[in-house]
Length: 278
Image (cartoon, rainbow, N blue to C red):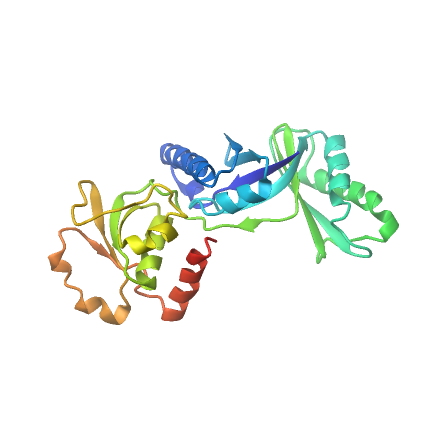
C-alpha cells in the first residue's frame, strides 16, 4: 500500500507547547488544501511525521507540496517493521526501479526499539534487493550508487521509498499574525508569498492576484481599507533603492519589505513558481 510520508523542518526547533500548536495548524492546513483540491484522503500524525492515505497519491502530492510548513514528501510503500516483511516488500518494490547493470545502495533510519540497528536494516534489505535483481547484473555501491532505496522504520511500521520531494518548508499559515499586503506587481506578489511562508495570514489588497495566492492559502481574503483588528503590519513589494521613498510614518503599523534584498531576476523566478502553483 502506498502512503505519503510528510516531514516538517523548522517546526521541530520550537519548544514542546509551541511545536504542538504549529503541528495542529499544519495538519489543519493540509486537510484544507486537500479538500480545496478535491483530493480524497485520510491524514494522520504520529511523532514528527504526517501520513496521507489517498486514492490518487500523485494528486495528493501536488496538493500537499503547496502547504507552507511541509519540508518534504515521499511516496512510500508501507509494511510492518518485521525484518522479513521489509525485505519482501523492498525486493518487490525494487523491481523495475533499477535497470540492468546499475549500482544501488540502501539508506536506512530507525526510531523505536525493534531489536535491530539501522545498519542491520540496510544490510538485510540490500541483500533482498540484490537477490531480487541478480538476474540483471545489479551491483552494490555504498559510496556512489546510481539508485538509492530509503527505508524509514518508525515503531511497528516501515516505509520504503526512493524520492524526497522538496517543498517550501517555512511555517504553517496561521501560526503567526495577520498582515495586509499591497500587491500591484510581481514584487508585491512575491512579498505576500514570502510572508505567508513565514506563517502569516495575509489580507490582500489587489484582487487580481487573489487566485494566485489562494493556491497556497485557500481561505485568503481580499480587503479594502477597513482591515479590522488584530493586524500586525503592512507588506510592500519595494526595491532596496526605493525604500527611502516610502513614508512609513503614514502607516499606523510596522511596514515590511520582504523582497528588499532581492534582484529583479530573483523575484521573476519566484513569481513564475507562484504562477505555476509549484
